[in-house]
Image 1 (tube, rainbow, N blue to C red):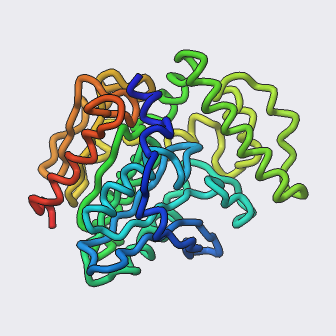
Image 2 (cartoon, rainbow, N blue to C red; image 1 turned 135 degrees about the vertical axis):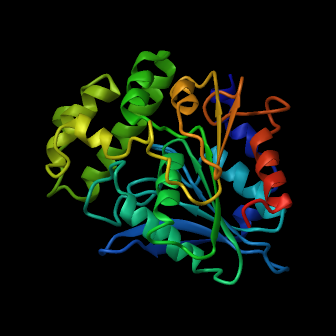
Length: 310
């Protein structure tokens, strides 16, 4: 119920000043890559900072959890940037190349350029699910290629082991599997329409599991090799996060149907890494009071108010 209600539009009914203030922006992500986003500036006051949000796999800048969180922090006085990963939202036409989960360079470049929109104020990054995985990898890069005013990272239900998460989706209730599978197939059809000379996915869209479709699509990624090698490129289990040297808060739930809580229990101790495991919350849910209240929004707000990591 937490997982399902977390994505229902019921959460974002009513007035939305953040959406009213939003302006479409094409962000340079390096190497000719362009990513689509929406920038909401405070209209009548100096912003407290800038918060960038990254959605999960086959979500977008318009996903309910993104819009709800963006509205909440816009009302708290922050500028907001809702970033779409490649081939998410209405961005399939922007790049000839196809999305995959290992595209960290372009995503980090985009986040850096977004932070540059408000260079004299602190910036923060909030990532959900796969977007949380991207956020963690950007946090790891801060030691080598820092974004100067990017002060703190928050991740909700981040997928640490994408291979096991894909298997979990396939083994879960049919409503979940079909939800992700149908959205992925719709995205691939959209990409094919944008670049018919490059992509012909019709012959693989009959697959009925995410893992089978992943294996079938690998020929379009010759540089990635076998699908298990591909998943390893953005797996963050074991000691992968041991070198994090910027404040990171991970919020996850023991009852998440797609992300194993054991992955978080095994993470190495690190003074910069705050791991908050809730008994309930589902995947990117954490609705309290249920079904319209949002606990993680208040939790992140409290951390920012205390100035931790600033």
